[in-house]
Length: 497
Image 1: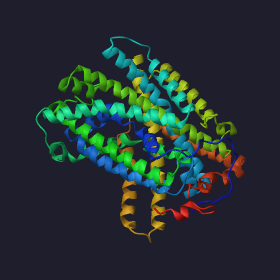
Image 2: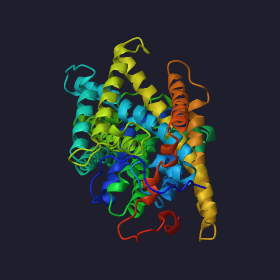
Image 3: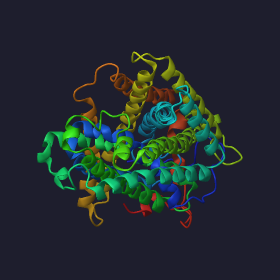
Image 4: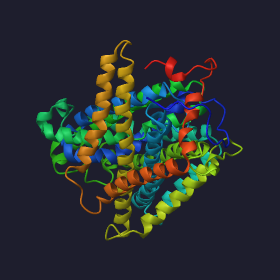
């Protein structure tokens, strides 16, 4: 099914030695931003699912686990910094891989390499206003986050991933304190399993909640980008992506259950969760104290920063892989003395500045503060659409990969899991596009479609002007041997699904 081309494309620098472990891969998979998502994104689920928000999150977590399994199918076969680009190039053909790589790159640019810095702008500004009674310029948070993400990544992937792990770990503590406190106190009307009864709202409400719950997990596949620098990537990456999604799902379930009983049925019906700029902070002040509300809001800021750091690990490595293969200017394959993709980091730094300028100059809303929020929503939604498009591609191709291995044990349940993995992003699209959003939110759809078209044009230009490089694309993913494997073996032929 794949074009198998020996050798490799245009060479540049080298990434770091293969010292990373499963723990580092988990840190990279935390690009899902679980604390940020729990604080900011769960409100989207609550807006439609209400008292059944935990049920929607539970079912959405199952769908996300299926998508994680789909990614693991490829991670067991191929190793490369280009990850999604190389997965689809080796499994389908080089042209489709290049097209998909362009889509995924643009998704990263809008989501974690752009939109998150706008998010840091209003998060930090809001934190200073709410808890320090101080006003800071809107751009300070995003600029500071961009500088930190670039510097940590320049000085080494291990330092960057450690930063992600530390920030994510510290950020989780206030949320767990809040959840435990609410559950122990019984919330508004006592602990209850009725949150899992769709009769409390409606089956349609639960279904619509699932569509948004899936968005809580976008970004977990970032773990695959550090495969070249791992000691045993074909074991570690699947463990990291599936394990991180499972743990994140459990975290979301505990937090959303606590928040649901904390607000209570009546308050949720009035939009208390989705309508608050800091719903978890409100609950913290009510059930624990103002001090925890401060820590909750700070935790959301810190986790948004950890997400930015994680994506700054992923996106420059994709640029590095594309530059190494001669599909982008060769300068993109340049690495620093710390074995980090310095050209990609610089490019992402410039892109982050441009996104901040875009956020400051646009006028999607009547006030500057509202415009920053709307701009963040447009960028994050466009990025999510582009990344979820890759999830769809991966699931469709994974079905054939699993089918081709049907002589092995358990093939039927694997096929079912892959189909669930296909349904998850499709349902996410349905929830976001039905009904079709109006202005200015529809700008995200145009960016998504424009990104698809731009990726196709890029591939066609390469196909007609650099056919030799297209033929040699993604060869590194097939050639790269895991430590301990014999020379000359084809990884995809010896690694089971």
